[in-house]
Every structure is written in structure tokens, then in C-alpha cells.
Image (tube, rainbow, N blue to C red; front, side, top):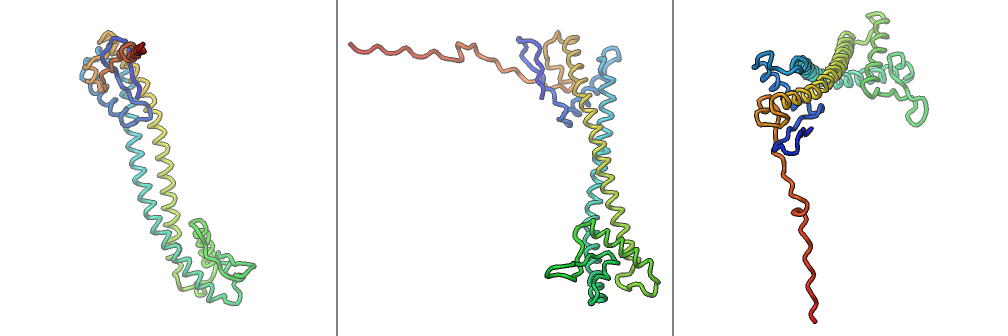
Amino acid sequence: MFRVQYTNSSTHRVVLPYKTQKQALLTLAQAFVTQENSLPPEDRTRYTASIQAALATALAAQAASAAQEVSRKSASETLKRLDAAARTTVSQIRSLMEGRFAYNPEQAQTWGFFVRQSGRGAGNILTPRGRDEIIACLNQYITTEEARPIGEQFAEPPLNEVIALRDELNQRLQQRNQARQERLTHNAALDEACTVLAKELRLALTALLLNNYDGEPERPLGRWGFQLVARTTRLPREEEQPLAPEPEAEPA
């Protein structure tokens, strides 16, 4: 918080939010605009219009950011369910490959699977790990199956179900990423608006102090939302630091 103090004789000081304290800044701006709008136009500060515009921008960006966060969380929860379904489907297809190509496992690569080439597990059909590998495997499986005659396609899992799963997975992933990017954009707009508010409110406070209160922070400033606190009175240095006691005289 900024502490605004104009004279040493003032009994109060004004505490202003930093631009990073967004909610406190918005609360102050709302109170300020409400008070200013209750006054005749000629009695308002020259900064009122810009504060009102920045406040409207900030509130709109905040609401839009919150809405995108709800959309992102919803898409993320759906993605968790789809990831589990995709892992199950890929595992089912891998078991199918193992049974069909027990003696020539390299054939499974045509359907999007990798086969270990050397070592103890040479010839094993590997299970895709992670969302990107699973989607790539599903894409290749679908491409291969669609190129085969319908009568030769694998019956389980049904190809149309695999396609629907892949498409929904891609759709939800895109929705999640888009919501995240839009939220970041709205947050940037909110940051910019709060920077303007912090500057304009300090200027408006200065104008109020000079025009209405002779530069002295007074309690009525609370009507504009400004927070006033009592100043701590410091004792003079000689009162703060007691003198050291005189040494006692040694006995003769």
C-alpha cells in the first residue's frame, strides 16, 4: 500500500492500494466513482472520467477472465475423462495387435504402434505414453483402418467410436487451450487498467486534498473510498532514548 502524507502536522495519512492489489484497487475505484457521480459535474475532479473508463475496462476484463477460467476448468475435467477412455481404447487395440501379429509384431507399426527393436523386450509392441503419443496413435490407427475395405476392418473397438473419441479429445483440448489463452489476454487487460487506476486515483486524491482540504488528509475523504489511518506520534529523541544513569561514586 502507498502511504500518502502531505504535511508533518497532519494527524492522518492516506493508504492507497498498489496496482498489483487489484481487488482493493477496484473497490476503491468503485467507491470513488459512486461519490463523484453524486456530485454536480462542476464539482468533480478532472480525473473522474478516466477513472470511470478504466474501472469499466477492468471490471469487464475481470468478468471475462473468470468466465474463461470456468470454461478452462470444465474442459480440463472432461479431458481427464477422455484421457482415461483413450488409454483404455489404445490398450484394447494393442492387445488386438499382439494377437493378430504374434509372429510379425512389426506390422503393428502400420496402425501407429512402436515396436522395440532390441534388448530384452525386442519385438514387444509398446504402449503409447502421454496424451500426445496416444492421439498420434489413434490418428494413425484411424487412417489405416479407413484405408482398408470395410469387411477387413477390425470389429472391436468399432472404428466410428474410435473416431468420435479422437475428435472429442482434440475438441476439448483445443477448448481448454483457447480458454487459457483468452484468460491470459483478459488478465493482461486487467493489469493495464489497474495500472491506470492506481495512477489516476493518486492524482485525484491530490486534487481533492488541495482543493477541498488545504492539503490535509481529513476523515471526509472516506466518502470517496480512501482509507485514512491515524499517524503514529513519535517522541523526541531525548524522550525516546533515556539518559544513562550517573555512575555511583566509589567509597573512600
